Length: 564
Image 1 (tube, one colour):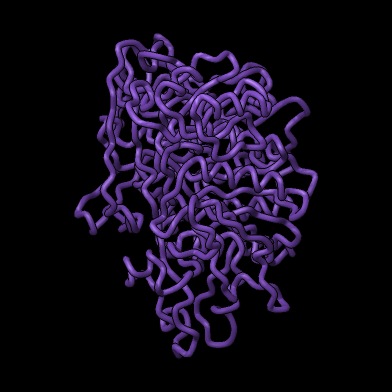
Image 2 (cartoon, helix red, strand yellow):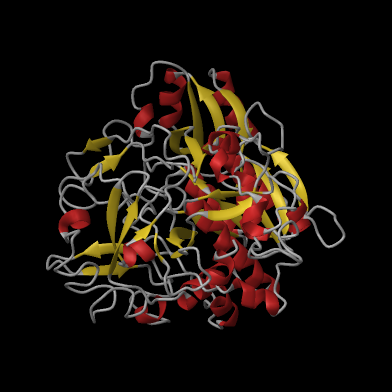
């Protein structure tokens, strides 16, 4: 049994609530254009309004004239942020020009051994370091750090802007975004050279970073601010060659991804040619719905376009053979849409990366996570307060973002769908059927089953992805498919015909997921496929009538995207 570190800010109190619905065909009562928390408002509401088409000035002014306050019109999907009195909210919801209205919701932030564990060191030795590629980091900011400079000492943070309402600072007061940026593109200048026994190098150590701050000093923000940051990434795409968008944050799911404004924004980025990589979430231990952590993926990781990343534990070694799944990593399928997630997993447990400042919120809260120079340089003459250790899917996500940057450096013509395809196809698919991991911080042991909804297509292999040659055909896509279960209890993955797997498969399903993803001979679906008959989880945990499918359905009103 292995020991595992829980995500560092799991101590924050989060309330998880569920509503039992009468019918699976009805998501909530009342106006279907209003999200659940807007059904019976008594005070003005901060909302995101999605329009059926671009809203002209006349229509926007008519909303303002009725008493609404316009805060921001989004550029790359048909929506705007307003404060609306209840009577105006109901009036607007009746308009045929309005698609959906949702409340502005909070989002929260979710290498020495990890780098070689995903074969990124081989990529660097072959000359792939992310040069010329821009990665936009939507997070708590990125602090200046020597490891984020180029060979001439110039910062590779080429652009910075804050979208946090009421706070224009671009600095990282929380400490999360700098850590994420280091995993993507730290060059280890402060942990390499004579006498250093460990080196903390990111996956793409010469990539350019675009700092789009959307989380405040407590690691919190709103989906409206995040959407504004996504808008900016699309606007800045050509200027800074932004090819990858890293989202190491999330929030609960309150509606289908087809109506969720945060999901619609990330789809706009994907359709603009930007690879979007999102954290799965850290709720894999959450059994509040009786699902043993299944169906806990957060938004926007629930969107089928994006690459959703779960967390592995590299066990503190460069070898891949001893790596195990992190028990806190959220599992699929997704609430409401039953999308098969995560898409891939990468190291996320006890990852050492950049420290923003000893005065940052995370460093003040967890001073023991500051890495002593004596750990990586025996003589302890290295500059102190350079590195910090965190755990969570937030740390796994930039591993994949860095890998995508290397792939795009190697071949700038790759589309987001082909990047996703190559990452999934090349992912390592050799796992045990199950593992038991103990977390001594909570005095509890957890058993993980290595099924499709836990590990996705498998474990990130950067060198494998760089050597893959699959191309998504024109007119097709790599949208993550929906999962379903038939009357006989067989699990299947369903997707529209323009997806590369489905009725007319371009690549066989065993190529993407492989026969060794789970124990048994029926690949990923079949009568005992996702969980065998001897599984400790049990087939009806996720597929039962009261959780994801059936005559009654649980609707989660707040799933914590707990920070890391």
